[in-house]
Image (spheres, rainbow, N blue to C red):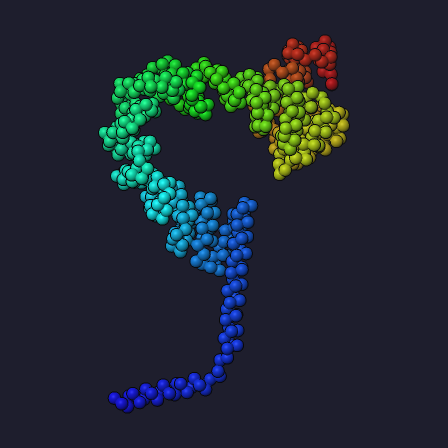
Length: 583
């Protein structure tokens, strides 16, 4: 045994001796190694901080993909950075990638379990994913973490109710009640849970507790009446609705409940009378009335009111809220649905008297002016709109349209130049401005410049059918580039085979190319698709028939053109001499 011990001592001595033979490590050498490690750590920390700050900047300026890349780099440097995980989860949540967000937040919380913001975001994600039980678990942790924050108690109870954990939800609400006493919000929530879980008796008891606590509060009787109505006990429902009127005759909201009651009874007239009383009440806010009106006017609503009744409600709103622009907006929308554009415009102009800074209303007015072809109104209204919205190119465009129609061609060119300055990344609108400039130039007799502009407009927007049609028609009138005109008008007719104006253009191009039989086919299509009262189309048909040597029919359609308002002296000569004359 002693030999073994001695052997051990000898080995230890040898090993110790070997160590002493090595080159001794100096204090300077140790300090240098520590400094290198410290510098490397400091460099990584600085890199992390830089990347993290840059990620937040990119997120703020709306570059989430770049922010994700930078935050991922942060996690490569420090895989346990809870704050980087949280920020990354936030971006994923905004992009609706809830799975990735929840996984990141789970890990962040495991690293830093005391951070409430991580838990709040995870709870919200669970709610969005309908994982209500998991959300309830998070709120339970938060209320234990901050026992004075009552919001967590309410959210915990709500999530349990959403998860259909009814008994646990009731316990959670009763825990809150122990802290703050009898509370209307708690009682209503408990009543709803009792109804959902089939415990109707308990639901009634909960509302009765509220009434006992404050017998003069009329809305508690409303809750009781609504509960009776939901259970099919219409007699007690009516009894308690009337009780509200007894306690509070000025209550406006009860009339809406009574309206619903009479609808269930099948008495639409009484239901409407109660709705009118609710709309008349000064104690009901306008927001509630507007929401109810939208429900009663919705096409898919089973309770949709007839037009006269809807107008009756609108008139009540105008009488009771004459200074609120929303009422006139509502009326205008009703008139637009009824295809009464001119009357709708009157109401929209009233809206603008009360609220001049609503661009969408101005735009709606201008479009109605355009649809009505009321060029003077479009000119004047667009001028006013430009004063309020000097950077909106659409307003300039509509003003230029009015200028062309009113033969203010020089002004149209100026407006187009100005409006184009505000067009950003919209080749179609830019092409429309160039088209209007081409129209103005054509009307001023500057044909070469006009046709250059038409070419440019079509280059910018190859599907600009108005440019294609008008350009083709102008070329046909001059009898030049007819092959090009035929290609353009052919494309338009292919896209709009039932449009009488486009069909007429194509027919006239073919006429100019002496393809009279084909021209006849297209002009007849134009007339049968709504052009039978258009004097220009009727004259063109007469011209085509003349070239086909159908003289009697030609004279008949020339006469129809005159009867429908064509006062051309050339047309008069055609009828008189029974001969075709070029204009």
